[in-house]
Structures are given as C-alpha cells and as structure tokens.
Image (cartoon, rainbow, N blue to C red):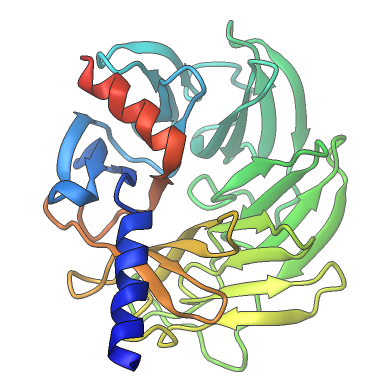
Length: 319
C-alpha cells in the first residue's frame, strides 16, 4: 500500500511539473530557457557576463545583467532593447566603482536599481532619468556586497539583503529602515569558501511570505529562516534537512500558491541539484540539476509553471 501511495504521489508530482520551464542566468554560461521535461533542452539562450538577477517581463522580454555594472533587457530575438550601465549613467563625484546585484521593472514602467558601492536605491525612467533615490544603511560601502537581492514590495517598501553586513532590512517608501534582522550564526564559527564547507550569514534574498512573516535565504549559512515581524525564528531549513541533498549557498526563494518553496542551491557541486522545490514539511517534490547548460555558480533562476510557462514556450517556438 505504501509503495502504491508513493507511486501515485510521484506520478501526480511529475504531471504537475510536466510543462515547467526554467530560466537560469550564469556568467559565461549565459541566460537560457530550459525545458526539464525534455532532457533539459535549451529552448533559447543568450550570452551574458556576471549576473545576480533575472526577470521575465510581462512583454515577454528578459531583464537581466551583462556584467556587474550593466542591466540589459533582451527580446527573444536576442536584441538588447534597453540597457543601463551604472559605470556611466548618473554617476556621482567620488564614486570609483559601482556594481549592481539587483534590479526590478516596476508597474509604472520605471526600473528599480540597487547600486552597491554608491550604496543607494534609484528608480529610473526608460530614458534613464532618476526620479527617486535614497541611501542604503550600510556599515561600510562595498561595491561587491552592499546588497544581493532587493525587491520593492506591494506596499511600496523595499526588502534588502545586505550581504556584507549579513542583515536583512526593510525600508519604507522614503528610505527609512522599519525592520531589520541580523542573520545569526547559531553559535558556529564563520568559515571561508563558497561550497558546503563554508559558513556565514551572507544573506542572499528575502521575501514576505503569504502569512506575513519573512523568508530569508542565508547564503553561505546553508539555510532558509522564517522570521516573524517580532523577529522570532519559527521555521528553519538547514543544510542537511533534505533527503539526499546538501545545501551550499542558498540564494533565490519563491513561495508557490500551494505553500511549497522553491530555492536556489548554488556552489553545491555536481552531486546536488541547483534548484529544489520543497514542502513546508521539508519533503523534496521536484529538483533541477543541469551542469551542462549551467554550472556550479547558478545563483539566479526562475521556475515557470502553467499559463506563464505555456506563453513563454509559444513565444520561443514561434521564433
């Protein structure tokens, strides 16, 4: 009976993910649309440099990066239809080095950009004019690690993962910090490196869960933390909690409508998947491993299901 039940659950899971597509972006490997149901067949690809963010826009274009200072918007013909180079645009005196690790196309058509080095969030028009900006609170400006993932929330606030300071902060629409949470080391010593052997609190991303709590990926802390607004940790996924999977640098996170979580598992080596979907009971229901099209530094990805995946598949196939 247990074997039959397991088979039924597996079949249901495979069917639920039959149309799933993955968009991954990795330096030198490129940004690619991959079909896991067809042997990780590449449906579309474009070369890019260093990258820490990727979006599928409502118009079907892809917003990503081509090197740390540069954001590009690509159509599916491979044309760069918009770009922003932080090393050239809207520069302030005295700033020698700028990197971008997060961007977001906003509903008003403008683009939110988190600049590391200048330690600020800006909003620019399609014509690249700054219409809003405010400074980020960091202990010391760091062009490579002021931030990782940054997102504007539905209420106009900004949720910022400050990698160097190992702290997640929520800023209000005017740039005031209204909530912050230092990532704890839980009594462990920090260890250098990028793989499973390393350890720290270099948070990569945070989202607001549907229940109002914060879900934080701790980067080289190998974990996900669920934290209440009162800063209590009420759930935690640790490095070896998933059967047969070791977590390394935990990067992206998404909460699905059914409550499952999709997480990015970067620098974990070819023995481990780069993307994993789990239940809140820490059961693995789907995983993605592709070290041919992507490698050991797949830090950012999108997982598409349903109508969104179908629409992208149709657009790619029409090219």
